[in-house]
Image: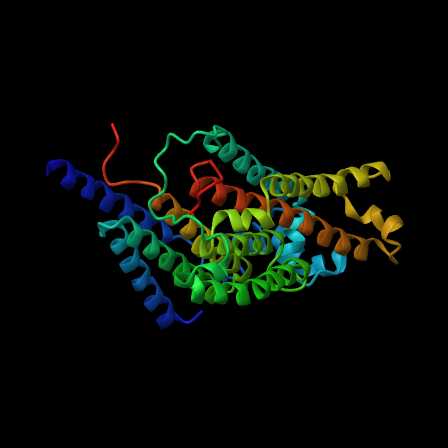
Length: 81
Length: 266
């Protein structure tokens, strides 16, 4: 566990979370959420939890980003009723 | 405005309390913390047992897999069932069987580009995907098959294998992916996965032991002792988990992207 590396990842993590919350475009928000997933994966790998990091890379950053984008593509800005 | 200020205040106070609570945590990786060493005067910690004994018990170098698939095999079986239930819920909520489509067609979809070669605007993406997908699938199978010796296992390998079909659907067309991995086959695969997992449990019962007590399977695997039988059984149940996860991941994508019609995907 390298302390300086930890701090850098955590700062990026907070920045990515804030951007994902504040950005107007839902597509960009889901892409940034994927970045957030990869940063958490990096944090876990760095702490030695390689199995969890692997799962996070496959599920959190890979599949869930795809599912979010798929859902965003099927929504419209205005509601139909 | 006042609600925003109040909400921010609530978040800040909760965050401060949580940070204050973490001050009492033991240091990261501390061998004398209660979780690692057990309580003084009480029973010894179970993590100590796993660290020292699990290789001798199961001959599986990856501690995480031996805990998940053997010592806590019952938990993992129902985690797989939860994933299967999620796929069933997606099917029950989203899937529509009407022929006439009163929903608006998806504007991002262009008709008639089922095959990569016919559409020049997608030729770079299509060719790249065609080159990369076999490598991804091979890697997924490696992750499943090698999960008890290195990081990985059924969940991760299954997700990667499901993602390879999602990539085909994203790069070409949902119909193209469904012609390789149809609705019937992915739900069959998902059900067969759970059947494999539960089958290992029932097989142990048939041979006169407890549910998911793999050691007794040495009569079937013809190994020297119960340790290698447990190792082989872990590989077997990981394959079952991978089947279920592969099928359900693609099922969720296919139903979400086509609004349940399975016709015009993303």
